[in-house]
Image (cartoon, rainbow, N blue to C red; front, side):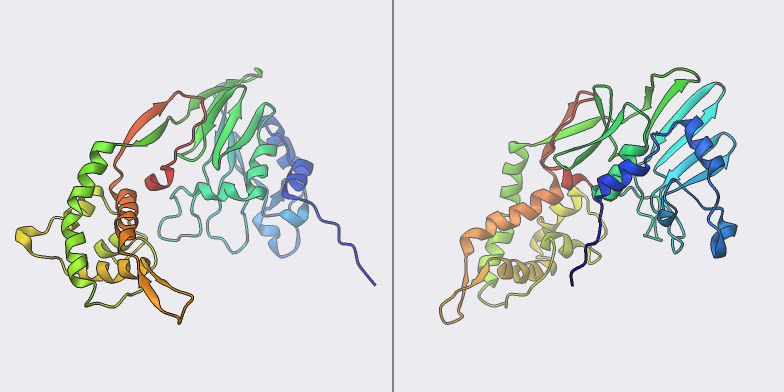
Length: 313
């Protein structure tokens, strides 16, 4: 016997329940929705539509402010505001929030736009924004599109406003983007700066054993906590020993880079060290941390592809 289980894509789910809300309609939906009953009755949970998706709900802040959330799970201390609507002195405001890292108890306010890479979250935003607004995924870059303009949602909340009774929205708070290009003069200098380490590597590689180490070996030589960022100045200081005193961390870097450029062959399970690849591997790590780039401003409202975007997160 075979069984057929009906399933829906995130697009289908969100298109079926999305509200295309404004302040008036989100308020109306809230007031007309019976709260979840049972053990969670005291929490006043009002789902946007399907009651089996109560994590997607409307929250009333006051008579003049409501917001929707996509991750209002019962085990979360914090949850993300997705879109907020409010009224103030005859003006309607809509704030489209960049998702936060709510699961990180150390800093639940830290921006975490990667949530928008989830199809369910992406389409949740798309179908609950007012008519005329859309989410756009442009080469993994997330934008809110209104009319013919695109506004990045990865750098912080964006806000639109309009007078009560009018149909068109105006951007109030949006963010400019910068596209980064490699500065050849800076990279030329960086390649010169690492030569002492390359000479040290050639001296020590025959003595030390290759040691596996995940992540950026230069970063780990500066700090052991891989979640902490480092500045370009800290990076360059690593390659400029005081009075010729070699840092202890250089030995650790030799071990890590020896592992990265050593490959196991298919004959007699031997290993071969490809010394010619060392500079390519180390400069990749170095450029990521030193960021030898020029930033060029992108006209507001246009999309862009920043090849080095990940370096600036």
